[in-house]
Length: 173
Image (cartoon, rainbow, N blue to C red):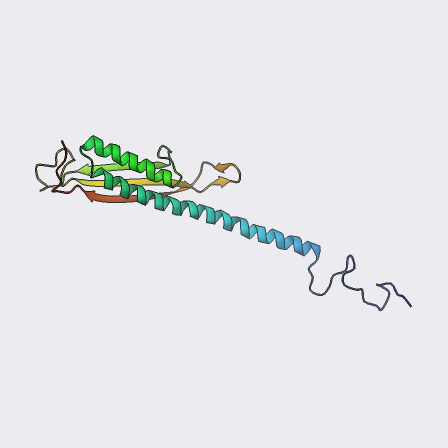
């Protein structure tokens, strides 16, 4: 004797269309779970991407400031030192995928002769001169998918490097 499922007193068999087994979510619940998952996943991925850009900017600014200061103090004169520092700045930022000409990137070099250095340090350059290099980069936080960054808030990352021209170094003049 064959009975069709769903007759009075007989349970419907799991696996039949429209019949849920024990513990299976309904179709509306599965959709809601997907929406909740995406609602949590998308912001998490966005934050991870911004943090990756912040970390890249930290490494780039720190490396660029250190390298620009290091080559500045090896210059033969002030013009050569500034040229060498600018070149190092461009190269290091390029290594990290950034452009030195980008308005978000900036480098500032301050030099001076501290008191008691001696007569070799003239006009902010020479043996004993103090050099301070500050490199900054603004990481945009507001972005749209497939369009990139938009005007809005950002995080400015910066690094400062202090160094001194060797007091006993003879400059080629």
